[in-house]
Length: 337
Image (tube, rainbow, N blue to C red):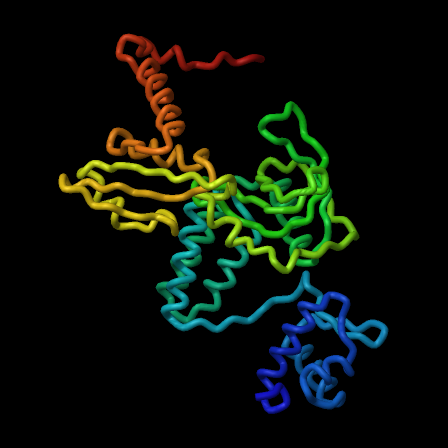
């Protein structure tokens, strides 16, 4: 079926989508050729879009959409709404600060839901995020990165890496925005001009971000999901096979979830199990392994086993009963006036 034979509603949606994804705008002739209709029909369609609130601009014979004012329309059934609610709850649990855009989005969704039960709980998810601390600099930086990613424009950032005494200026081309599954943090996967390579930048460590006029192109063969597949969370390093033996006390909990797409589970005669995953490095998985305490034993790699053994030894010294402070005054921080 060609665009010519589609309904007017479908054609309007096609025009809206095409204009949004063409920032420089399109002429009526170009839109007519794209939709397979005449120019008069396109002019009528543009008027219809304006009447329903689409922020259409017109300049030098071209039409476009004002991205900053554009609002999309989505219709969801009950089960799709529940799926969105789960995502909202996960976001509320995972966020450690107030993001006005997130709050606004959830409030709009809540207001549009006909089911009062789901609407009230969606509103509550928005309220939970709204009650968290607001860090304006972070929001401005995230919005700049989002605009750069959407418009394919370079960004100049001031980035404070953990291994450096001060922030360093970088020019990056954002390829992908991602949230960490193991911590309340956001990351931008970008081409770094300084290193001439793909790098992962934690948004919370970016001190400032300035949108540049220069555009960039994301390579056709770049697949962010393939890039992240190897990681436990966000760090894509050389793949390492990690083998973990869990005791019978926690094996059922381990079996209940898919922790990583590469995982293999082997049940043991005593009721325990062995979990094997292939991940990019061990930095991110280490804290997850340690969260299981004595109910997990690292079988491989030996380097990870040694690291955890060293940390446990330090903890044993730190938590020895004879080192317990005798007074809570030990924890009082002196105040200066």
